[in-house]
Image (cartoon, rainbow, N blue to C red; front, side):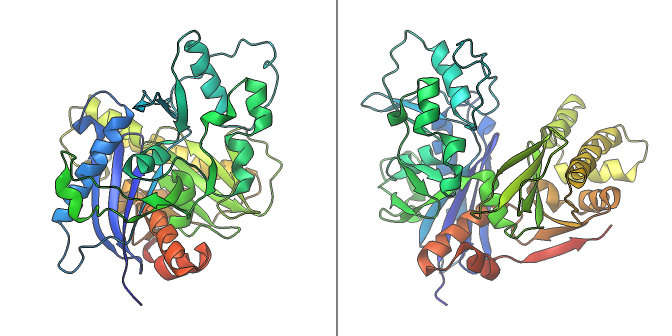
Length: 411
């Protein structure tokens, strides 16, 4: 099998991750750039700067013989939108997923239901901008914006057509009085959406050895979709646990359940015809970071601090870990009460690199937890899309070739 090397990146809430992954599913380099290391002002341009910095570091760590990238794929968090205005074109401050949604006072909208995850937030933004000429050209999701800045054509990336009403359609745009032409045309994830342009004039042009003009750019989807692919959560009954600033348990289901908990989110799955049932834990990594900061231990490594906490039962940080752990168990209970009996989960994210934390979660939940070789599932999912595009194989066939479990933690 001919070896191909893929440059994969994911735009998270607080940092950008990037990796080099080959078409056999082996990791050849990983970098994480915190946005606060670049600037205290979060704007779209910080993503581009973080991307170039990550690529420069990846290039420095490359082994001999691996100097060419076969394709690039980027995923990102959402629902966030980047307004692009004017002929220049200028990118304005993103409308972040965590920004409060202003109350919609239009009587025509009150009481009306919408499936769109984007339009209510965008309508609130437009109401605040009323009377100001923003000369809007496009609204991009973060990964679409970064792909476009690197050479892709303007697109909106869908996992598949079942997701259209969760983005926007003519009926919902008409209801919100939003111009449908502000959104780039839909394409499916995994499609070729352009090629890298030259970056030799960029201040980070030392990354040019990897960022060769003409490298294909493959359409990556939202981060949670890519994590489903990267953890192999593609068959009914399988589940994964995504950790980061927030945390989410995702279950693949054949049918929509009759829910008794308002805390579960139902969306189409990455695989058409299936459903993704999500239990969200809004503060997981954030809660631990807040404790680390408030206790004056910012300089301590995450894993070093958890070792200290577990080694001393009366450690003040124990209550923080117990709080995060109980939220994890509650999320599983919510899914159990909805009829989903989860016996094992594939883990994803930086937290699952900590064996003590994995053992603790397995013990308190009574579930088997599995850690894949590539723990950052969004990046693994990006690599799967790249290889599927080259090989012509399905996503499921490609996952079977590239996905492997490294460690298992039994309760």
